[in-house]
Amino acid sequence: MRCKNCKEKFEPLRFNAKYCMNEECVRVWVETEKQKQWKAKKTRLKKELMSLQDYLKIAQQVFNKYIRERDKGMSCISCGNEPKKANAGHYFSQGGHSNVRFHEDNVHLQCEHCNSFLSGNLLNYQIGIEKRIGGERLLALHEIAHETKKWTIDELTDLIATYKAKIKNL
Image 1 (tube, rainbow, N blue to C red):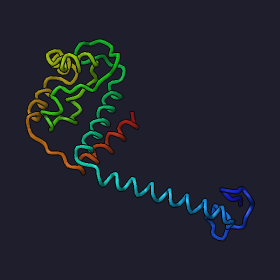
Image 2 (image 1 turned 180 degrees about the horizontal axis):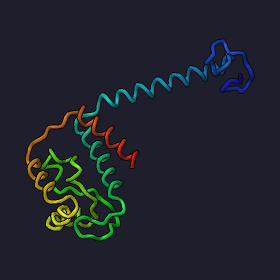
Image 3 (image 1 turned 180 degrees about the vertical axis):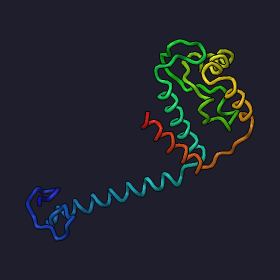
Image 4 (image 1 turned 90 degrees about the vertical axis):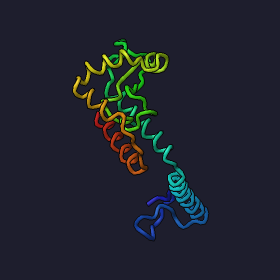
């Protein structure tokens, strides 16, 4: 077997040894292990310092990415044009209607012009969403939209994992 550092042949003392017992190679090995341990500790500390808002932000980014991938190739739900820059537009706003913030019937592909500059172009969005999901599902969405939802970190973590998996499957 060859040493990972000096590339010299050596007889390993353990089956998983990657470095010879040369002084310089041992120093490199120790430094490499320190870096691995620090990276793992840093990741753990970062995760411990994350707030509910941090998880909410990540969940929203992953969910929006899923919507853009799901609706790829479709036209804007409000104006019917091919979007130059695709957004995930919410029929019921994410800030005011937390219960349907991550509801797939509430969010559809929308051009940046309608979503950002026309504040969602909601009148045309309502026409488009009814055509896309049907009247019954739209009424059901209206019923649940006004319920209040407090998200937990565990729910958001599950949501992130679910939509990352859905993105892979698309």
